[in-house]
Image 1 (tube, one colour):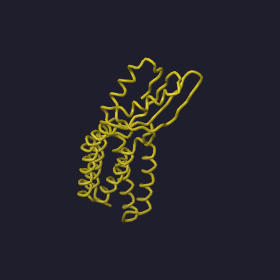
Image 2: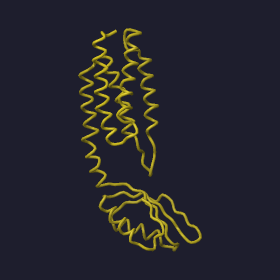
Image 3: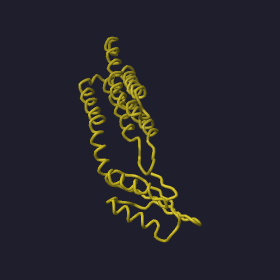
Image 4: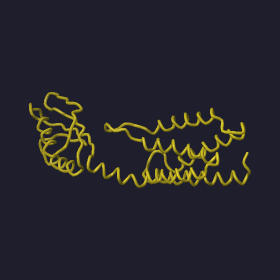
Length: 210
């Protein structure tokens, strides 16, 4: 069992490491934020510390159960909306926070520091790269409802082509007087903006959702 001073240092280290990563998630208003990431890092640290204390070395069964439990937590923040899977980055952050807590408990301070530095680069710096990618290849789901005629939806698909947008038909529904269509559309953000402006100024459209 480590000395009391060592345990205090490790506890402080856990709070700092968990706080640095949790701050970024909190700043971006993610489901697992500042307190959650610190608690995950602290929990994995405690389980690993108790494992070492009980058996004299890291118990593989306890370590594997930590990974299983964290996987359950991570799955809870993943959801699907607008044909996109959200929460994967937060789930991965939960996973890595637990690993860092285990690393602190086993005394691998340098590896924990280097790993935390890399995680912060991925979360902070790579976000700008991700936003740039979204600008040149943004995905949106459009739903349009118009009075029925044979070419109504085809006209919108031609409009997608005019704005250099790629589309995939999701579904089309017709009732007595109206027809609605929904598409998954990808392309530059500027092209999306032009298409949206065009649709918003079309008085024949009854509903437009995006």
